[in-house]
Amino acid sequence: MKDVKEILAEKGCDLWSISPKAMVFDALKLMAEKKIGALMVMNDKEKVEGILTERDYARKVMLFGKSSKETAVSEIMTPADKMYTVKPSTTVEECMVLMTAKHIRHLPVCDGEKFSGLISIGDVVKAIISEKNALIEQLSNYIGGKYM
Image (cartoon, rainbow, N blue to C red; front, side, top):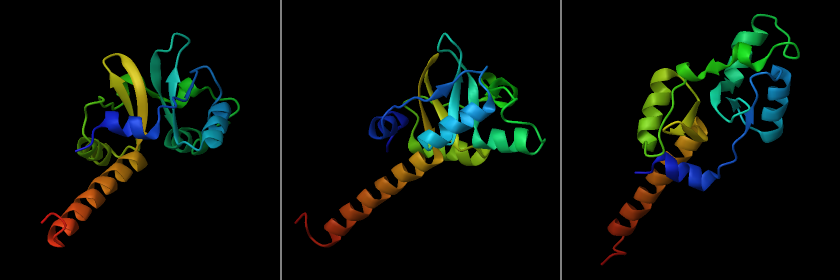
């Protein structure tokens, strides 16, 4: 069973973040440029203040007619004390259960107080499919007599 640490090792640990003082427009530009759906919001001391997702934008800016060029990230982000997080040792299946139950697409990975990465629902699904494919191959080889 894979864990979060293995997912981060496979995908690489590019950590993209933005300041809580930045404008939402700048966050959206960065997400589009990096082809990601969420950014960690970190202060000048590299402390996690929250997370900003595409859903935050859709639900807190667009729906209320705010301007992304005039709205600070801190106004719409999910604050750190309301974020769901996982540890590097959390299993892929535990992540899937949490994401499904809480209807979230991104999970910050924290090792104690230290932020170490961000995984998405896509990362979790990819890991689960990979595990299932490996199991299918092993069973096919066993049935086909490869191990005899």
